[in-house]
Length: 484
Image 1 (cartoon, helix red, strand yellow):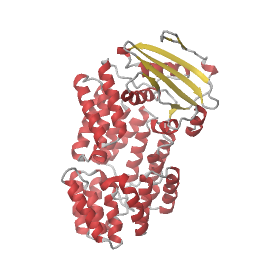
Image 2: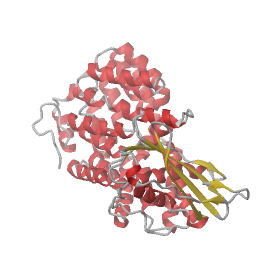
Image 3: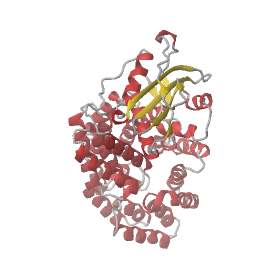
Image 4: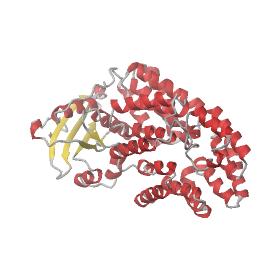
């Protein structure tokens, strides 16, 4: 490809005979290099290109987060390929003006940086939306592969609305309360104008699913809304992996219909074997039911697809922690913290282990270090437990007061109150909060049966009734599958 003096791009497709290409099984899609393009659109466009390439049969595609971690340091392609353990890299450049958009893609050998294949396409700006799918289709052809049967949207989306969709993807990736609300607003406005655009419903479902965790939304409001959006997406595109993954979480962790959740997770993965998030969510569902081997297996798959994700790396230790193998869990969490020294969630997991082992001062120190990043609910409530057990009951009660004040302005999970109450030795109050969590279908309730905070209640009939209502077994229960 060459750029003429006038600035017009000369398009080319430098093909290599398929038999000349090396066998490529693992690929990383690098962020697009851009010029004269709205920066807010770029992140969403990267997602769309990654999603399109992920549809290539037999190809393992590394998740976006891991790729970003390697490219942020400006490493050369060979170093990126080594870090991600891939055989090839897909790089791209994007230029756009008022009339045209040009996408220039290169397939790079990760071993030596050689260009294996290139594909350059120019489209009218108003026809830019389908470009990622076109690139993936050509790439599949030249890799002697085929696209899976998952169709791209058959709806012709107006350019301004497609740009709105990309902006919504950008905000969703930020994972904050404010950014999720902005994404939801964009998706709602987009759906009003493009009621048959399945991808907008998928994005809306994903955003509402995360609202309880990041924005303090009540699960009894957020999860039904997520379910409705996912079901709307499936009515338009029955083969939406993203929609099935959302329904897997809603069915299992909100409706406690674990077998239906399993079916949706399995369908999501069969439609898109590169969906690392579906593997991660499926693993969590297995862990809560004490199916630790299945949990670990799915976490390994997620890590294979997203090898530099701190959250998925940390999660590798969860099956051991929940199963009570604390030394193994500690080894895993400590290794993650050495790899990502500033990652608070790994520090938080080690604090949980200290607390489970009665190392109150160590637990308090770790919780306090993680608290600024984890926040008053995720980090503050567990801190109240070792405070109380270490004799610092006033500090524990202060956390309860903080949670009560916070609950006047947003939803606070009842399990958070129960964590502190059980630390204070108030079993009656702890059970009252757990029963309230049951009524609210609190997100965190599914973890109670495998977490250490409430293990002293395992023999209590009221506690066992709560676990039976959810279908989450306790140790030595007869039916560990526990689905209904």
